Length: 298
Image (cartoon, rainbow, N blue to C red; front, side, top):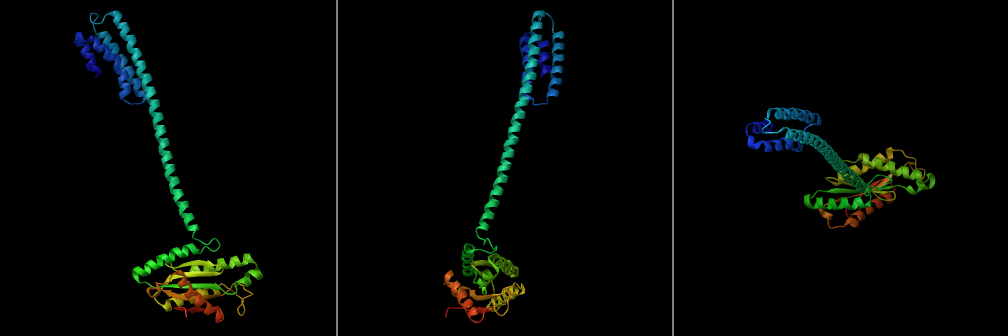
């Protein structure tokens, strides 16, 4: 473009004024159009100045008088200065815009990270709200929610579940003789032992005080009783001192068991609990440290 402009000024006398105007404007236009580095822009301005001086030397005095040459040179070099200043200002504006854009991107990334952390904390709080703070077993709220899911699964698939109600024998004696801190430690150790025997599909809940509920899918009464006996023996194997437990002197549990299925889906949660309560009562009546099973309240 520059060379064609110069050639036009040299070969077409009638366009000398327009040529001079274009040569003055071109540096400023280039500064606006080409976002190259400052060092490149300065080298280009120097080359442009040399070309413009060559143009002044080649154009005849008749076409461009001496007085006009001086004016043209002054205005041209002012234009070169304006081009350099404009380039620097545009570079600064671009750097500022880039910095702002990066800052905005950083804020977006931070906001995304904060949202992920917020969701994680919310999920953790949701889990905490459904756990017993002392033992880590599910609480009554979690039990109610999971029983609702169990009902739906029984209704859809006809699958059978087992419910165990576990009670620590003479637990009040632990608190009375050894203190409540010792009692709390016993509860934690018992729950850890129970959870250690459970499968991924099973779940344990603190029902209240020293009573716990276990829900587990089982195919039959025999499978449920096998699981209950395994839990009872695991607790005995802990050999936790219990001076108030007559006969054995260590912590033991009584367990009431019942099956949940399509045959008693008409019962509400309290009806299911009544079945395990009845079985647990029989275990205690027969001497404790036993498993008893019932299918109906009689």
